[in-house]
Image (cartoon, rainbow, N blue to C red; front, side, top):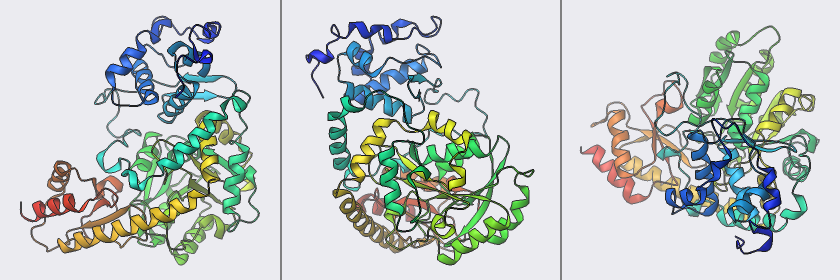
Length: 498
Protein backbone atom coordinates (compact mmCIF):
# COMPACT_ATOMS: atom_id res chain seq x y z
CA UNK A 1 0.00 0.00 0.00
CA UNK A 2 1.31 3.41 -0.89
CA UNK A 3 2.08 5.91 1.84
CA UNK A 4 -0.23 8.85 2.41
CA UNK A 5 2.84 11.08 2.13
CA UNK A 6 3.02 10.34 -1.59
CA UNK A 7 2.21 13.67 -3.28
CA UNK A 8 -0.19 11.99 -5.72
CA UNK A 9 -2.23 10.74 -2.77
CA UNK A 10 -1.99 13.83 -0.58
CA UNK A 11 -5.50 15.04 0.35
CA UNK A 12 -4.43 18.69 -0.02
CA UNK A 13 -3.04 18.06 -3.50
CA UNK A 14 -6.28 16.35 -4.50
CA UNK A 15 -8.57 19.09 -3.18
CA UNK A 16 -9.63 20.14 -6.72
CA UNK A 17 -11.15 16.69 -7.14
CA UNK A 18 -13.52 17.34 -4.25
CA UNK A 19 -16.08 18.62 -6.74
CA UNK A 20 -16.41 14.99 -7.88
CA UNK A 21 -18.14 14.22 -4.57
CA UNK A 22 -21.82 14.19 -5.44
CA UNK A 23 -24.13 15.74 -2.85
CA UNK A 24 -26.82 13.13 -2.06
CA UNK A 25 -30.25 14.01 -0.67
CA UNK A 26 -29.72 15.94 2.57
CA UNK A 27 -32.45 14.09 4.44
CA UNK A 28 -30.74 10.73 4.09
CA UNK A 29 -27.10 11.19 3.19
CA UNK A 30 -25.53 14.60 3.39
CA UNK A 31 -22.01 15.52 2.40
CA UNK A 32 -20.83 14.60 5.90
CA UNK A 33 -21.18 10.86 5.35
CA UNK A 34 -17.37 10.60 5.34
CA UNK A 35 -17.02 12.44 8.65
CA UNK A 36 -15.24 10.16 11.09
CA UNK A 37 -15.01 7.37 8.52
CA UNK A 38 -11.38 6.49 9.21
CA UNK A 39 -11.97 6.48 12.98
CA UNK A 40 -15.08 4.34 12.66
CA UNK A 41 -13.19 1.92 10.40
CA UNK A 42 -10.37 1.52 12.91
CA UNK A 43 -12.74 1.10 15.84
CA UNK A 44 -15.21 -1.27 14.16
CA UNK A 45 -12.76 -3.64 12.52
CA UNK A 46 -9.25 -3.17 13.92
CA UNK A 47 -8.09 -6.64 12.90
CA UNK A 48 -8.89 -6.27 9.20
CA UNK A 49 -6.85 -4.83 6.36
CA UNK A 50 -7.41 -1.23 5.31
CA UNK A 51 -9.46 -2.13 2.22
CA UNK A 52 -11.77 -4.39 4.22
CA UNK A 53 -12.17 -1.74 6.93
CA UNK A 54 -13.20 0.74 4.25
CA UNK A 55 -15.78 -1.78 3.00
CA UNK A 56 -17.22 -2.13 6.51
CA UNK A 57 -17.28 1.63 7.02
CA UNK A 58 -19.10 2.37 3.77
CA UNK A 59 -21.55 -0.49 4.26
CA UNK A 60 -22.37 0.83 7.76
CA UNK A 61 -23.21 4.23 6.28
CA UNK A 62 -25.46 2.64 3.67
CA UNK A 63 -27.20 0.61 6.37
CA UNK A 64 -27.86 3.55 8.70
CA UNK A 65 -29.04 5.86 5.93
CA UNK A 66 -26.15 8.28 5.67
CA UNK A 67 -25.70 7.00 2.10
CA UNK A 68 -29.08 6.73 0.38
CA UNK A 69 -29.92 4.38 -2.52
CA UNK A 70 -28.98 6.03 -5.81
CA UNK A 71 -26.20 8.15 -4.29
CA UNK A 72 -23.25 8.52 -6.65
CA UNK A 73 -20.00 7.63 -4.90
CA UNK A 74 -16.80 9.67 -5.16
CA UNK A 75 -14.40 8.66 -7.89
CA UNK A 76 -11.58 6.34 -6.87
CA UNK A 77 -9.02 9.15 -6.93
CA UNK A 78 -11.29 11.57 -5.07
CA UNK A 79 -12.01 9.15 -2.21
CA UNK A 80 -8.37 8.10 -2.01
CA UNK A 81 -7.42 11.77 -1.72
CA UNK A 82 -10.00 12.53 0.96
CA UNK A 83 -8.94 9.55 3.09
CA UNK A 84 -5.21 9.74 2.37
CA UNK A 85 -4.99 6.16 1.11
CA UNK A 86 -3.89 4.62 -2.17
CA UNK A 87 -6.15 4.38 -5.20
CA UNK A 88 -5.49 0.63 -5.15
CA UNK A 89 -7.09 0.39 -1.67
CA UNK A 90 -10.23 2.24 -2.82
CA UNK A 91 -10.45 0.20 -6.03
CA UNK A 92 -10.29 -3.05 -4.06
CA UNK A 93 -12.92 -1.78 -1.60
CA UNK A 94 -15.31 -0.65 -4.35
CA UNK A 95 -14.95 -4.06 -6.02
CA UNK A 96 -15.81 -5.82 -2.76
CA UNK A 97 -18.82 -3.55 -2.16
CA UNK A 98 -19.96 -4.27 -5.70
CA UNK A 99 -19.65 -8.03 -5.09
CA UNK A 100 -21.81 -7.60 -1.98
CA UNK A 101 -24.42 -5.75 -4.10
CA UNK A 102 -24.03 -2.65 -1.92
CA UNK A 103 -22.70 -0.63 -4.86
CA UNK A 104 -23.40 -0.82 -8.59
CA UNK A 105 -21.53 0.74 -11.48
CA UNK A 106 -22.32 2.17 -14.89
CA UNK A 107 -19.80 2.53 -17.72
CA UNK A 108 -18.39 6.05 -17.67
CA UNK A 109 -20.50 7.05 -14.64
CA UNK A 110 -18.66 5.47 -11.72
CA UNK A 111 -20.17 3.81 -8.65
CA UNK A 112 -23.53 4.41 -6.95
CA UNK A 113 -25.43 2.97 -3.97
CA UNK A 114 -27.80 0.14 -4.91
CA UNK A 115 -29.85 -0.34 -1.76
CA UNK A 116 -29.73 -0.30 2.00
CA UNK A 117 -28.65 -3.77 3.26
CA UNK A 118 -30.41 -5.00 6.37
CA UNK A 119 -28.46 -5.26 9.61
CA UNK A 120 -27.70 -8.72 10.89
CA UNK A 121 -30.86 -10.18 12.37
CA UNK A 122 -33.10 -7.47 10.91
CA UNK A 123 -35.75 -9.38 8.95
CA UNK A 124 -38.59 -6.87 9.23
CA UNK A 125 -40.54 -6.56 6.02
CA UNK A 126 -39.11 -9.71 4.43
CA UNK A 127 -41.68 -12.43 3.68
CA UNK A 128 -40.83 -15.73 5.31
CA UNK A 129 -40.97 -17.58 1.99
CA UNK A 130 -38.27 -15.41 0.45
CA UNK A 131 -34.83 -16.20 1.93
CA UNK A 132 -31.89 -13.86 1.65
CA UNK A 133 -29.23 -14.28 -1.00
CA UNK A 134 -26.39 -12.95 1.12
CA UNK A 135 -26.30 -15.73 3.71
CA UNK A 136 -23.04 -17.31 2.61
CA UNK A 137 -21.44 -16.49 5.95
CA UNK A 138 -22.93 -19.62 7.50
CA UNK A 139 -20.32 -21.89 9.00
CA UNK A 140 -20.56 -24.66 6.43
CA UNK A 141 -20.00 -22.19 3.56
CA UNK A 142 -17.02 -20.32 4.97
CA UNK A 143 -13.84 -20.16 2.86
CA UNK A 144 -11.56 -23.22 3.00
CA UNK A 145 -8.27 -23.11 4.94
CA UNK A 146 -5.33 -21.27 3.39
CA UNK A 147 -3.69 -24.45 2.10
CA UNK A 148 -6.68 -25.01 -0.20
CA UNK A 149 -6.68 -21.47 -1.64
CA UNK A 150 -4.70 -19.71 -4.33
CA UNK A 151 -4.07 -16.58 -2.29
CA UNK A 152 -0.45 -16.27 -3.44
CA UNK A 153 -1.51 -16.32 -7.09
CA UNK A 154 -4.17 -13.69 -6.43
CA UNK A 155 -1.84 -11.45 -4.41
CA UNK A 156 0.78 -11.47 -7.16
CA UNK A 157 -1.91 -10.74 -9.76
CA UNK A 158 -3.18 -7.85 -7.60
CA UNK A 159 0.31 -6.35 -7.47
CA UNK A 160 0.72 -6.54 -11.23
CA UNK A 161 -2.69 -4.96 -11.85
CA UNK A 162 -2.04 -2.22 -9.30
CA UNK A 163 1.26 -1.30 -10.97
CA UNK A 164 -0.51 -1.00 -14.32
CA UNK A 165 -3.49 0.99 -12.95
CA UNK A 166 -2.60 4.36 -14.58
CA UNK A 167 -2.66 2.67 -17.98
CA UNK A 168 -6.27 1.55 -17.79
CA UNK A 169 -8.18 3.93 -15.51
CA UNK A 170 -11.20 5.60 -17.12
CA UNK A 171 -12.79 4.97 -20.49
CA UNK A 172 -15.95 3.13 -21.46
CA UNK A 173 -16.32 -0.48 -20.35
CA UNK A 174 -16.62 -2.94 -23.26
CA UNK A 175 -19.87 -4.88 -23.54
CA UNK A 176 -19.84 -8.37 -21.93
CA UNK A 177 -16.46 -7.78 -20.27
CA UNK A 178 -12.77 -7.18 -20.84
CA UNK A 179 -11.73 -8.40 -24.33
CA UNK A 180 -8.44 -9.91 -23.15
CA UNK A 181 -10.17 -11.96 -20.44
CA UNK A 182 -12.85 -13.15 -22.85
CA UNK A 183 -10.17 -14.28 -25.30
CA UNK A 184 -8.29 -16.16 -22.54
CA UNK A 185 -11.49 -17.92 -21.46
CA UNK A 186 -12.45 -18.79 -25.05
CA UNK A 187 -8.96 -20.21 -25.68
CA UNK A 188 -9.30 -22.47 -22.60
CA UNK A 189 -12.50 -24.01 -24.04
CA UNK A 190 -11.53 -24.43 -27.68
CA UNK A 191 -10.46 -28.06 -27.22
CA UNK A 192 -14.15 -28.90 -26.64
CA UNK A 193 -15.67 -25.97 -28.55
CA UNK A 194 -13.31 -25.26 -31.46
CA UNK A 195 -15.56 -22.62 -33.04
CA UNK A 196 -16.09 -20.67 -29.80
CA UNK A 197 -15.53 -16.91 -30.28
CA UNK A 198 -14.58 -14.38 -27.57
CA UNK A 199 -17.84 -12.57 -28.44
CA UNK A 200 -19.72 -15.57 -27.02
CA UNK A 201 -18.09 -15.14 -23.59
CA UNK A 202 -19.75 -12.96 -20.95
CA UNK A 203 -18.00 -12.22 -17.67
CA UNK A 204 -19.98 -12.26 -14.41
CA UNK A 205 -19.62 -11.30 -10.76
CA UNK A 206 -19.33 -14.88 -9.56
CA UNK A 207 -21.46 -17.87 -10.52
CA UNK A 208 -24.47 -16.49 -8.62
CA UNK A 209 -24.08 -13.20 -10.48
CA UNK A 210 -24.11 -15.13 -13.76
CA UNK A 211 -27.22 -17.06 -12.74
CA UNK A 212 -28.91 -13.81 -11.68
CA UNK A 213 -28.26 -12.20 -15.08
CA UNK A 214 -29.63 -15.19 -16.99
CA UNK A 215 -32.69 -15.61 -14.77
CA UNK A 216 -33.61 -11.94 -14.91
CA UNK A 217 -33.03 -11.70 -18.67
CA UNK A 218 -35.00 -14.81 -19.59
CA UNK A 219 -37.76 -15.18 -16.98
CA UNK A 220 -40.23 -13.01 -15.10
CA UNK A 221 -41.34 -12.99 -11.44
CA UNK A 222 -43.78 -15.82 -10.89
CA UNK A 223 -42.27 -18.02 -13.61
CA UNK A 224 -41.33 -21.59 -12.73
CA UNK A 225 -37.89 -22.98 -13.55
CA UNK A 226 -36.58 -26.53 -13.46
CA UNK A 227 -33.74 -27.01 -10.96
CA UNK A 228 -31.97 -30.24 -10.17
CA UNK A 229 -32.31 -31.39 -6.56
CA UNK A 230 -30.27 -31.46 -4.41
CA UNK A 231 -28.73 -28.16 -5.53
CA UNK A 232 -26.61 -25.39 -4.06
CA UNK A 233 -28.32 -23.66 -1.13
CA UNK A 234 -27.25 -20.22 -2.41
CA UNK A 235 -28.62 -20.95 -5.88
CA UNK A 236 -31.98 -22.05 -4.47
CA UNK A 237 -32.14 -18.88 -2.36
CA UNK A 238 -31.30 -16.76 -5.39
CA UNK A 239 -34.09 -18.26 -7.51
CA UNK A 240 -36.65 -17.75 -4.75
CA UNK A 241 -35.45 -14.25 -3.90
CA UNK A 242 -35.90 -13.23 -7.53
CA UNK A 243 -39.54 -14.35 -7.26
CA UNK A 244 -39.22 -17.44 -9.45
CA UNK A 245 -40.73 -20.78 -8.48
CA UNK A 246 -38.61 -23.94 -8.24
CA UNK A 247 -39.71 -27.22 -9.81
CA UNK A 248 -37.33 -29.82 -8.38
CA UNK A 249 -35.95 -32.42 -10.79
CA UNK A 250 -34.43 -35.22 -8.68
CA UNK A 251 -30.76 -35.99 -9.30
CA UNK A 252 -30.16 -39.73 -9.11
CA UNK A 253 -26.39 -39.83 -8.83
CA UNK A 254 -24.99 -39.42 -12.34
CA UNK A 255 -28.37 -38.80 -14.02
CA UNK A 256 -31.44 -36.61 -13.76
CA UNK A 257 -34.79 -38.27 -13.16
CA UNK A 258 -36.04 -37.72 -16.72
CA UNK A 259 -39.49 -39.17 -15.98
CA UNK A 260 -39.95 -36.55 -13.25
CA UNK A 261 -38.72 -33.82 -15.61
CA UNK A 262 -41.26 -34.87 -18.24
CA UNK A 263 -44.06 -34.59 -15.67
CA UNK A 264 -42.93 -31.15 -14.49
CA UNK A 265 -42.26 -29.55 -17.90
CA UNK A 266 -45.95 -28.71 -18.62
CA UNK A 267 -45.89 -26.41 -15.56
CA UNK A 268 -43.25 -24.17 -17.15
CA UNK A 269 -44.20 -20.85 -18.83
CA UNK A 270 -45.89 -21.14 -22.21
CA UNK A 271 -46.77 -18.67 -24.96
CA UNK A 272 -43.25 -18.65 -26.39
CA UNK A 273 -41.61 -17.54 -23.12
CA UNK A 274 -38.25 -18.90 -21.97
CA UNK A 275 -38.31 -22.29 -20.25
CA UNK A 276 -35.21 -22.97 -18.14
CA UNK A 277 -33.43 -26.01 -16.73
CA UNK A 278 -30.56 -25.41 -14.30
CA UNK A 279 -28.28 -28.40 -13.90
CA UNK A 280 -24.74 -29.18 -12.82
CA UNK A 281 -22.49 -31.61 -14.65
CA UNK A 282 -18.95 -31.76 -13.24
CA UNK A 283 -18.65 -32.39 -9.47
CA UNK A 284 -22.10 -31.07 -8.59
CA UNK A 285 -22.67 -29.21 -5.35
CA UNK A 286 -23.55 -30.69 -2.90
CA UNK A 287 -23.21 -34.32 -4.05
CA UNK A 288 -19.75 -34.08 -5.59
CA UNK A 289 -20.90 -36.46 -8.36
CA UNK A 290 -20.37 -35.78 -12.06
CA UNK A 291 -23.02 -36.51 -14.66
CA UNK A 292 -22.40 -39.55 -16.83
CA UNK A 293 -22.27 -39.35 -20.63
CA UNK A 294 -25.59 -41.22 -20.76
CA UNK A 295 -27.13 -38.85 -18.21
CA UNK A 296 -25.94 -35.81 -20.17
CA UNK A 297 -27.36 -37.23 -23.41
CA UNK A 298 -30.74 -37.88 -21.75
CA UNK A 299 -30.81 -34.34 -20.31
CA UNK A 300 -30.15 -32.80 -23.75
CA UNK A 301 -32.84 -34.96 -25.34
CA UNK A 302 -35.33 -33.79 -22.71
CA UNK A 303 -34.27 -30.16 -23.30
CA UNK A 304 -35.00 -30.50 -27.01
CA UNK A 305 -38.26 -32.31 -26.38
CA UNK A 306 -39.59 -29.57 -24.07
CA UNK A 307 -37.87 -26.58 -25.76
CA UNK A 308 -35.72 -25.78 -22.71
CA UNK A 309 -32.85 -23.38 -22.41
CA UNK A 310 -30.26 -25.17 -20.28
CA UNK A 311 -28.07 -23.28 -17.81
CA UNK A 312 -25.16 -25.62 -17.19
CA UNK A 313 -23.58 -24.78 -13.84
CA UNK A 314 -19.99 -25.84 -14.40
CA UNK A 315 -18.12 -23.84 -11.78
CA UNK A 316 -16.44 -26.86 -10.17
CA UNK A 317 -15.02 -28.46 -13.34
CA UNK A 318 -11.50 -27.50 -12.29
CA UNK A 319 -11.90 -29.86 -9.31
CA UNK A 320 -13.06 -32.82 -11.37
CA UNK A 321 -10.28 -35.42 -11.75
CA UNK A 322 -12.54 -37.52 -13.99
CA UNK A 323 -13.41 -36.51 -17.56
CA UNK A 324 -16.92 -35.25 -16.88
CA UNK A 325 -19.11 -34.57 -19.94
CA UNK A 326 -19.90 -31.01 -20.95
CA UNK A 327 -23.47 -30.30 -22.03
CA UNK A 328 -22.28 -27.20 -23.89
CA UNK A 329 -19.76 -29.26 -25.88
CA UNK A 330 -22.18 -32.12 -26.58
CA UNK A 331 -24.84 -29.61 -27.66
CA UNK A 332 -22.41 -27.49 -29.68
CA UNK A 333 -23.67 -24.38 -27.82
CA UNK A 334 -27.11 -24.51 -29.40
CA UNK A 335 -29.47 -24.43 -26.41
CA UNK A 336 -26.97 -24.51 -23.50
CA UNK A 337 -25.41 -21.55 -21.67
CA UNK A 338 -22.47 -22.77 -19.61
CA UNK A 339 -21.56 -20.96 -16.38
CA UNK A 340 -17.91 -21.51 -15.50
CA UNK A 341 -15.93 -20.34 -12.50
CA UNK A 342 -12.78 -18.29 -12.80
CA UNK A 343 -12.35 -17.63 -9.07
CA UNK A 344 -14.14 -20.59 -7.43
CA UNK A 345 -10.92 -22.45 -6.73
CA UNK A 346 -8.79 -19.40 -5.95
CA UNK A 347 -9.89 -17.04 -3.23
CA UNK A 348 -13.01 -15.76 -1.51
CA UNK A 349 -11.71 -12.23 -2.18
CA UNK A 350 -12.06 -12.62 -5.96
CA UNK A 351 -15.56 -13.18 -7.33
CA UNK A 352 -15.53 -13.73 -11.06
CA UNK A 353 -17.18 -16.23 -13.39
CA UNK A 354 -18.05 -16.44 -17.07
CA UNK A 355 -20.90 -17.58 -19.30
CA UNK A 356 -20.43 -19.27 -22.67
CA UNK A 357 -23.40 -18.30 -24.84
CA UNK A 358 -24.81 -19.68 -28.10
CA UNK A 359 -24.11 -17.20 -30.90
CA UNK A 360 -27.82 -16.50 -31.43
CA UNK A 361 -28.19 -15.33 -27.80
CA UNK A 362 -25.24 -12.93 -27.83
CA UNK A 363 -27.26 -9.92 -29.00
CA UNK A 364 -29.95 -10.30 -26.33
CA UNK A 365 -30.52 -6.65 -25.26
CA UNK A 366 -31.84 -7.62 -21.80
CA UNK A 367 -28.72 -9.67 -21.12
CA UNK A 368 -26.40 -6.88 -22.25
CA UNK A 369 -28.25 -4.34 -20.12
CA UNK A 370 -28.06 -6.58 -17.04
CA UNK A 371 -24.37 -7.22 -17.58
CA UNK A 372 -23.75 -3.48 -17.63
CA UNK A 373 -25.31 -3.21 -14.17
CA UNK A 374 -24.47 -6.55 -12.55
CA UNK A 375 -21.24 -7.55 -14.28
CA UNK A 376 -17.86 -7.64 -12.50
CA UNK A 377 -15.56 -4.67 -12.11
CA UNK A 378 -12.74 -4.12 -14.59
CA UNK A 379 -10.34 -4.43 -11.66
CA UNK A 380 -11.47 -8.02 -10.95
CA UNK A 381 -11.37 -8.86 -14.65
CA UNK A 382 -7.77 -7.68 -14.92
CA UNK A 383 -6.79 -9.69 -11.85
CA UNK A 384 -8.40 -12.77 -13.42
CA UNK A 385 -6.44 -12.15 -16.64
CA UNK A 386 -3.19 -12.19 -14.70
CA UNK A 387 -4.13 -15.38 -12.87
CA UNK A 388 -5.22 -17.28 -15.99
CA UNK A 389 -2.05 -16.27 -17.81
CA UNK A 390 0.14 -17.37 -14.89
CA UNK A 391 2.01 -20.63 -15.48
CA UNK A 392 1.48 -21.45 -11.80
CA UNK A 393 -2.32 -21.67 -12.14
CA UNK A 394 -2.47 -25.21 -13.67
CA UNK A 395 0.04 -26.39 -11.05
CA UNK A 396 -2.13 -24.90 -8.30
CA UNK A 397 -5.21 -26.75 -9.61
CA UNK A 398 -3.29 -30.03 -9.72
CA UNK A 399 -2.04 -29.52 -6.16
CA UNK A 400 -5.54 -28.57 -4.98
CA UNK A 401 -7.09 -31.67 -6.54
CA UNK A 402 -4.52 -33.87 -4.83
CA UNK A 403 -5.12 -32.20 -1.46
CA UNK A 404 -8.89 -32.54 -1.77
CA UNK A 405 -8.60 -36.19 -2.82
CA UNK A 406 -6.53 -36.97 0.29
CA UNK A 407 -8.90 -35.00 2.54
CA UNK A 408 -11.93 -36.70 0.97
CA UNK A 409 -10.53 -40.20 1.47
CA UNK A 410 -9.60 -39.38 5.08
CA UNK A 411 -13.06 -37.95 5.82
CA UNK A 412 -14.86 -40.89 4.17
CA UNK A 413 -12.78 -43.33 6.22
CA UNK A 414 -13.64 -41.54 9.47
CA UNK A 415 -17.33 -41.38 8.60
CA UNK A 416 -17.50 -45.05 7.61
CA UNK A 417 -15.69 -46.04 10.79
CA UNK A 418 -18.35 -44.23 12.82
CA UNK A 419 -21.16 -46.15 11.12
CA UNK A 420 -22.19 -43.52 8.57
CA UNK A 421 -22.92 -44.31 4.94
CA UNK A 422 -21.97 -42.07 2.02
CA UNK A 423 -24.93 -41.02 -0.10
CA UNK A 424 -22.55 -41.11 -3.09
CA UNK A 425 -18.79 -41.50 -3.27
CA UNK A 426 -17.81 -38.11 -4.76
CA UNK A 427 -15.82 -37.80 -7.99
CA UNK A 428 -13.91 -34.85 -6.55
CA UNK A 429 -14.38 -31.42 -5.06
CA UNK A 430 -14.71 -30.34 -1.43
CA UNK A 431 -18.04 -31.95 -0.47
CA UNK A 432 -19.09 -35.35 0.82
CA UNK A 433 -22.64 -36.33 1.79
CA UNK A 434 -23.23 -39.03 4.39
CA UNK A 435 -25.61 -40.04 7.16
CA UNK A 436 -26.60 -42.81 9.52
CA UNK A 437 -28.51 -45.46 7.52
CA UNK A 438 -31.96 -46.67 8.64
CA UNK A 439 -31.73 -49.22 11.45
CA UNK A 440 -28.43 -47.95 12.86
CA UNK A 441 -28.40 -47.12 16.56
CA UNK A 442 -28.16 -44.58 17.91
CA UNK A 443 -29.56 -42.50 15.07
CA UNK A 444 -29.62 -38.89 16.29
CA UNK A 445 -32.12 -36.34 15.01
CA UNK A 446 -31.07 -33.72 12.47
CA UNK A 447 -31.32 -30.78 14.88
CA UNK A 448 -29.19 -32.54 17.51
CA UNK A 449 -26.54 -33.31 14.88
CA UNK A 450 -26.40 -29.71 13.65
CA UNK A 451 -26.25 -28.26 17.17
CA UNK A 452 -23.37 -30.53 18.12
CA UNK A 453 -21.57 -29.72 14.87
CA UNK A 454 -21.77 -26.02 15.73
CA UNK A 455 -20.31 -26.70 19.19
CA UNK A 456 -17.41 -28.61 17.66
CA UNK A 457 -16.81 -25.91 15.02
CA UNK A 458 -17.52 -28.42 12.25
CA UNK A 459 -18.86 -27.07 8.92
CA UNK A 460 -21.97 -29.15 8.38
CA UNK A 461 -25.23 -28.67 6.50
CA UNK A 462 -28.42 -30.73 6.55
CA UNK A 463 -30.09 -32.22 3.48
CA UNK A 464 -33.03 -29.83 3.86
CA UNK A 465 -30.74 -26.92 2.88
CA UNK A 466 -30.42 -28.31 -0.64
CA UNK A 467 -33.95 -29.33 -1.61
CA UNK A 468 -36.75 -31.72 -0.76
CA UNK A 469 -35.94 -34.71 -2.95
CA UNK A 470 -36.17 -37.92 -0.84
CA UNK A 471 -33.00 -39.97 -0.51
CA UNK A 472 -32.36 -43.48 0.90
CA UNK A 473 -31.08 -41.98 4.16
CA UNK A 474 -31.06 -38.71 6.09
CA UNK A 475 -27.78 -37.11 5.10
CA UNK A 476 -25.51 -34.19 5.93
CA UNK A 477 -23.00 -32.38 3.75
CA UNK A 478 -19.43 -32.35 5.05
CA UNK A 479 -16.78 -30.01 3.66
CA UNK A 480 -13.70 -32.21 3.56
CA UNK A 481 -11.39 -29.18 3.45
CA UNK A 482 -12.76 -28.12 6.85
CA UNK A 483 -12.92 -31.55 8.50
CA UNK A 484 -9.77 -31.92 10.57
CA UNK A 485 -9.35 -35.40 12.05
CA UNK A 486 -9.61 -34.40 15.70
CA UNK A 487 -12.74 -32.32 15.34
CA UNK A 488 -14.55 -34.87 13.20
CA UNK A 489 -13.63 -37.78 15.50
CA UNK A 490 -14.84 -35.85 18.55
CA UNK A 491 -18.06 -34.93 16.81
CA UNK A 492 -18.84 -38.48 15.66
CA UNK A 493 -17.98 -39.95 19.08
CA UNK A 494 -20.28 -37.47 20.81
CA UNK A 495 -23.16 -38.27 18.43
CA UNK A 496 -22.67 -42.04 18.83
CA UNK A 497 -22.58 -41.79 22.63
CA UNK A 498 -24.63 -38.72 23.56
